Length: 116
Image (cartoon, rainbow, N blue to C red; front, side, top):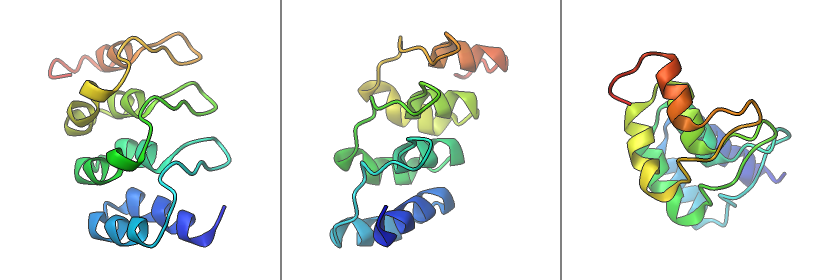
């Protein structure tokens, strides 16, 4: 993975939307995957940065799964990130199940999160 792509992951994790815009403008790959096959979109979703999701979505594929079979939407629900789940729900496969057989809705219901 190139340094610019590593910086994209770092900005997604830290919620630095302006930095994401800058890096994408410089050619960073929003579809890059780390060793677990996670993408910057997934990192933003699990970290709770919905603004970063909005920046990354036009350059990303929200249907991509990582090594655990999770999508960005599944991570948003798993980590109780309502704003992130709402940003992803219209562009994601809500019926997709991870490798444990759980969908995003299943993950949301595990925590008794009535908003999700």
